[in-house]
Length: 55
Image: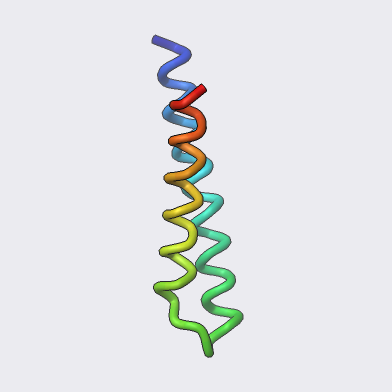
């Protein structure tokens, strides 16, 4: 139970880090559409989750 809660917390922290980075990049690079940054962050998050689930 505690391990599952820690894994959920780790996933939420990772998601927060990725989307914060995407937000910072999108505000500092206005010539690139914000969707590219958030789409990339979502893909990275999905790949990391799938890699974790595959082990």
